[in-house]
Image 1 (cartoon, one colour):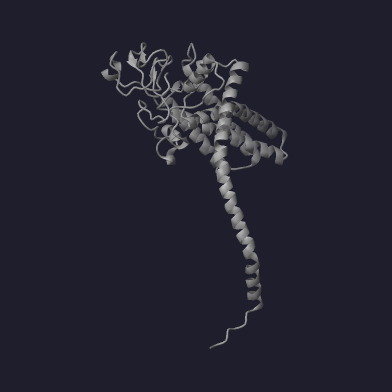
Image 2 (cartoon, one colour):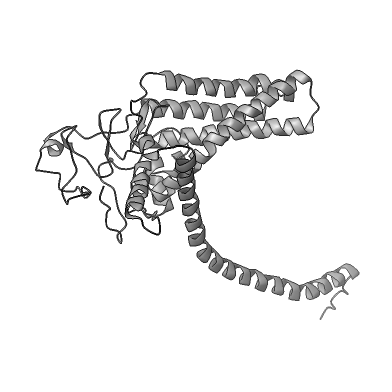
Length: 352
């Protein structure tokens, strides 16, 4: 039998290191396993707490705005009275977006010395393109209305699958103004003078009502406008902190930073509120109705439960579309026809 060659010094050191490291590795794996098990328990316990905390923050913020800022959320959701007609609000939004774009191109880019085809510039221009695309889609897309035909317009013979009822009776919701039955989650918009499917609110800055058909584009408009403002604000702040610039450039950058700060103060809370509504599968009108019922009944707790809450993923799909690949693109549309909505099995549908 041939003799085994003697181990070299390097092999001996490696074997010794493996032998000594083995207990440490086993201890690390045991600790990791324990952490994952405890982390799963902590996560399962923490998610309801965080959800309840977010509900309380949103509710208290809305109450504070109504109490101290003279904000009437009910009028905001139903639309202004008298309504803001014409294209003036839309032109005002376009002017703000143009100022935001000029702040980047004429203020930040020359001061930072970056080219138009630089990664920072290309990323900002992508955000601006998505802002304008979403804004255009939100304006031109019809939010949805009651279908034509006798099925919805014959008094005393409502469609059989209507589930929402009036507040004061068990009758289906007949709209006297449009002389038609209102589908579930639909409400009469006094600006458009017709019922709107899954109506969220009337937005004068879009010149349109946000409903089933264009809710996705409205949300993406908020999303990308908020991102563009924060992107510009962070870059401007970083440049002012890190570089010593001429007085004119500093003045232009301060103006750009002030614009982004002003827009962010308005947009970020509004965007977070609508994100909270989205993951709850709740519209602004439904939130207002819950808030009004809470105040009329004088209850101890304000309930944020929604009969349509099917889980975060399904809630987002119902607004942003079936495929997650297209959620952040201003194309496509929501799931369903806006006339019928799935509800939680354990929840009775709230009357409206």
